[in-house]
Length: 114
Length: 111
Image (cartoon, rainbow over all chains, first blue to last red):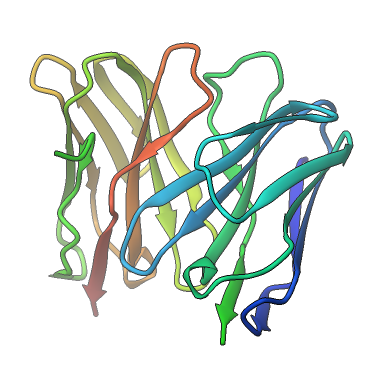
């Protein structure tokens, strides 16, 4: 069966510091991968998605970037964090080749910027 | 106007009650509809996935889609305290990668 791992679960960072959040998927090949952000009391906002290694699409212009160095690894980064980057960051995957398959989520990273 | 509207609640019902959760949407191009359950400090878990209009049943859960009214529902029968969570509706246009989510409804089932 497929599993998705995100770490760390919780992170507290000062304003202006860099960020690297990692997500890996097991049990499937060539998954579509996604990064979402969930603000308190709000729905999920898609930040980036990737249909293959090195292929990144950005949905929202912002202070963040994403990379996919390996087939089942997706990384969310920032060079300098802003207060507004606080939130719950979720990684998700879906089956490659069919964009209308449901997405499956990890347990997220709760990021607090001080 | 948001593409997907969902009453955030909170909704509180007694154990054993039938729960009805709803979302309305404005984009008639949505064809794929999902319901996710999210426990506190966890990621969303897929409950139901449906295509176009109609009903789908899975155990105590029933999902309904009415495309003519742009309205989807999730019914929970014989609700249990373990069903207490936030329920998110989500939908997708054919061929798109982007899921559009509702705000989520916080549900509490009281023993």
